[in-house]
Length: 133
Length: 476
Ligand SMILES: C[S@@+](CC[C@H](N)C(=O)[O-])C[C@H]1O[C@@H](n2cnc3c(N)ncnc32)[C@H](O)[C@@H]1O
Image (cartoon, rainbow over all chains, first blue to last red; front, side):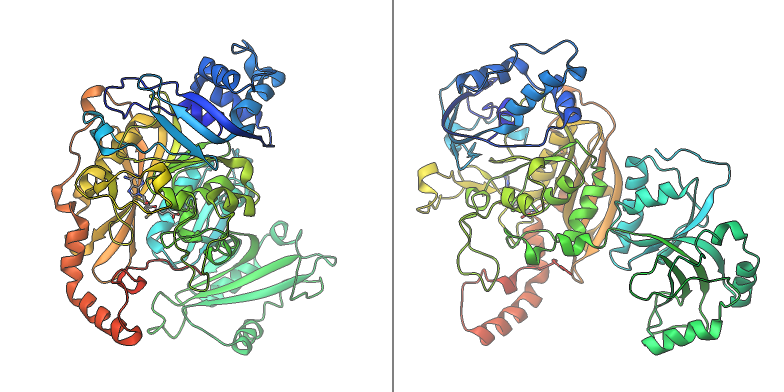
């Protein structure tokens, strides 16, 4: 699981959980992979992601080196900054570990790089269930 | 952009493959929109595979062909008539500026013939050219049948009914081949040679059509909320999108389901959606897949997508499920470590309502939702297709699967942002509810017959075997 995905996942489907974000990240196995740098894509993503959540997630697994703690003002033209974000968003891959709901502590396992966000029938928030996807 | 190079628009012939005809116009419209192509019809396009169009420059048709899988190719139209002598007159009167650059001593050439609907043998085709004798054209280069620099095409159109062809063709066309369409992707992305597939994988041609309906472009973010084996992510990634998927089935995302290839006993340990993208050199475009129930909220509110491209469960070949308590869970050994919750039937009205609500929330303005919907043809009514006030249905193409059943590819574009009051409404007619029940009631007779045949052929096996499923896949 890439940190980009972590940045947009929540546990709000759980009963009694209102925000469920950001999920706490516990990694037992991390792989750093090579992904081609696409400055346009990264700069398009920056206003869409929650930057502080990204920074904290990277920090919590010790992969924040080189990542500024705030978005650079001129980020669209700042390749060094975009490359640092690119690395953290797309190249740091959590192979195993878990995602933990910040409100309930419910853990969602990550196995072979794939998070399992399924919940038990008795954990589902009935109000949410009509909202879908 | 293909800017207007001059005031003189040029004529081209778009030559389409003659299948999935109902998807053709939708694809071309989507592509001229996403590629920002200026194009006009010379005559209103019909069901036949030759469309004459006008564009400001050759660039425009090349761009179109770089994406379209309906197109066989594009021809620069030199002459066109319903009468052969007029065609020859036009060719004789052709402005030399049109042909001179291509009829040069150093450029090899070949003349090809197409007689649409009138299948002729090779000698008969060769004969055609000799009889027509285009010898007045100042062709000076050497013939090269294998790999010519210049391909000239002569086409005769005999209508759409091969069993009822007229004595003389309805139309004649002559021109120079400009470029191929993307038919080659059908081979490149064929399921036959793909590492990880399942019995719900979508064939290459339709997957490409869906990506084009989604107006996918480089750098887009695309999600399939019912991702299965990820077949819809492949062309999206090929067109430059970053791709994500979710599926309720843990086993499918971990490639632990039974192999769907008859000759394959066990799955390879490294099968996965990611491995498929790697196979095609598209791993850079892979973001993630997540095991999750699409009937429940998963993403943060701000999560914004450029396109949602999906083939939801029909409840026939694979269960339509959501987390719930109506069924006793059957937990297998592989599933046990991650506990799979029990699932209840996920009715089609709810599924599509959820999907449209989700799209209204998470698509960017102008972003598209592309989804299939199964239909009993007898009960089809365009008015009953799922609706949402923020989504406009921009295309609706039918793929016939049997006398009773089809599926329709629906393309919605987000035209406004939802306000809170819009969510959760029941958005379409209940007559589409419980497709599975209706399907099975309707098809009971033919199923019985098939089942009996099946059992008498191979002896009793589980009633869920492949013969009982509808199999729309036509991977060619
Ligand atoms: C028609 S298949 C899609 C196949 C896919 N296009 C592929 O390439 O294999 C529908 C998929 O939806 C999944 N599904 C069924 N109910 C679901 C739900 N509530 N949430 C998420 N996925 C679900 C099934 O496991 C199945 O893989």
